[in-house]
Length: 165
Figure 1 (cartoon, rainbow, N blue to C red):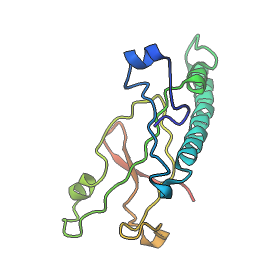
Figure 2: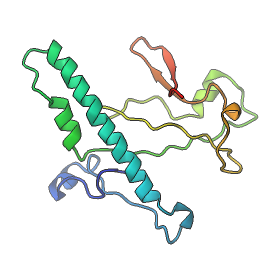
Figure 3: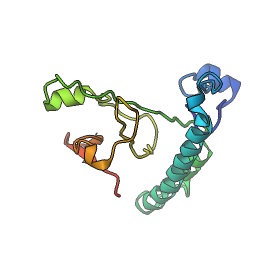
Figure 4: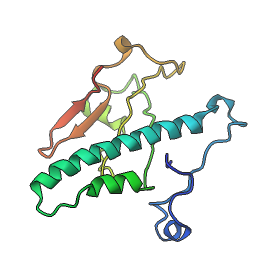
């Protein structure tokens, strides 16, 4: 979904670049009352994340201006601040089958596959671990310490990324 607008870009841009400018489709809250306020909450979080990206871009611009001769002031900031090309994704990872071998490969196969993000900058919200039978949030002591976000650095090393408490 696009957290900034339900109808991004111009009609011409949407026709020419449909993957870059898709229109939002939201669940009907009348049909799914458990999703009351879902759209507003998702958009609010997405807008906070977008604003954060713009602020980070400003700092990247300062660093780049020190290293690149002729770097235009606020180049990345302006691009991030004024774009309507934003993507929000809500991901759900299915629980690992209890009968499955607990190898690294088996664990990785149950998560989203390795991929490159498509944006200039990626903002990630904190994770939420739920009991797959009740849907209730897990307490920290119930969460597998190996669960969470992994990134691969340029040397091919996998790094477990944790959000500070």
